[in-house]
Image (tube, rainbow, N blue to C red; front, side):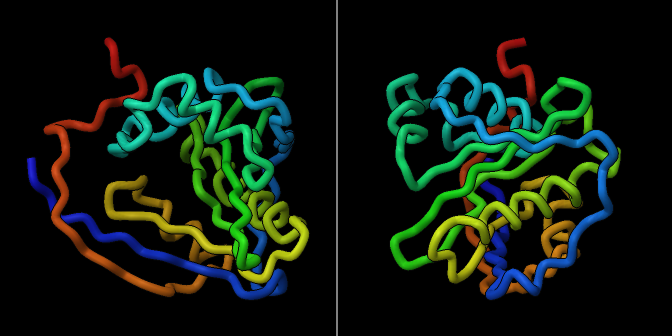
Length: 179
């Protein structure tokens, strides 16, 4: 199916532009320091399945490992009571930009007040990376309905908007794509 998709690129130019989300009691954010293709693929499929995240689905285990095992990439998970609730990837670019390359909550934890708190931590960790000059992210009309609002609520400003026709499956793959 062909579908029109709008992508928004948003940015923060200073750590002082961050507007923190409400604290989420019990939320812990920890870095996954060992590259784990299985964990990252699980998070990608589970978080992105409802939203047409399909770009990485064909990746082999080796491709996942090559992506994760780079010094410029950091993987972070949010936990509540020992359970992963969401995750983000930060990718440092050579020009001092840090991209929030992936961000999202597992479906069972959407709507529980965790997104703003987890995004706040993602932004803080991005600014803590050495040499950060700008933090940016992109989201699109296929992402969760609160995604863009969450970024803007944290202080991100629109940098660019692009619309393109893309080929998509009739339905998003879902969090359980083999069932």
